[in-house]
Amino acid sequence: MPRFALKIEYHGAPFAGWQRQSGQPSVQEAIEVALRRLEAEAPGIGAAGRTDAGVHATGQVAHCDLVKDWDPFRLAEALNWHLKPQPVAILAAARVADDFHARFSANERRYLFRLIQRRAPVTHDKGLVWQVLNPLDLAAMQAGAAHLVGHHDFTTFRSTMCQSASPVKTLDEIGITAHPVPQGTEYRFTLRARSFLHNQVRSIVGTLERVGAGAWQPEDVRRALEAKSRAACGPVCPPQGLYLTGVGYPEDPFA
Image (cartoon, rainbow, N blue to C red; front, side):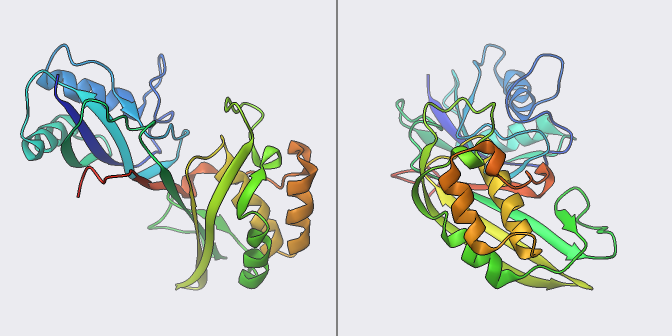
C-alpha cells in the first residue's frame, strides 16, 4: 500500500485533542473519516505528536496507507473538501517510503506558545492566546529559561499522567521574544527538542510567566528543575496559546 505523509493545520478548540477518543471529537478521527470518503477501507493514521484538548497546530505531520497511488496534490485537495467545515486543513501531502513513520522517524518537534499581556480583552485572537493583565519582565523570563536548556531530568515540568518511560530529555532551544500589540505586548515562546513530555511546554511557560510577573526569581527556575518534584513547578498555563509548529525529519518529506 502506498504510504503518504500529511502536513496538517488545525484549530484545537472544537476537539478533545489529536487522538481518537470514544464519544468525543478528535482531529485524528476527522481526518480518518475524510480518508474513508476516498477509500472505504483506509486504515487509521499515526501522528508525530498527540496534542491535548484545545492545542493548535500549524505543522503537525501524520502518515497514512492507501490502496490507490494518489497524486499528492489531488489527495490534499480531496481531503480538504471532505474536511469541510471543520477547522482542519491538509497543507501538503507527499509520497514517502514504506518505513516512514510520522512519530518514530521524527528527530525534532517545534512548539510556539503565544501569551498576550494587556488590560483590554483580546478579540481577534480569542481562543488562540493566553492573556495576562500585568506587564512581564522579558529579560527575567529569558534568564529563567536559560536554566532549562540542555539535557535534564524534567520531572518537575512533567504531568503526573505522563506515560513517557523517562523524564530525562534534551531541550535544544527556548526563545522568548516580545512584540507590540494594541495597548499591550505579545510574548512568543519557541521551544525545540527531539521530543517533549506530557504538559512540559505548558508547565515551562506557566513557570516562566511567574518569573516575568516578579513572583519568582530567574534562579528559582533552576531550583525547581533540580527539585525533580511536580510540586516545585509553577502553574500550568492554559492550552489555547500552544501550537505544534513543525516536525523535523532526516529528510523533509515535503521539500
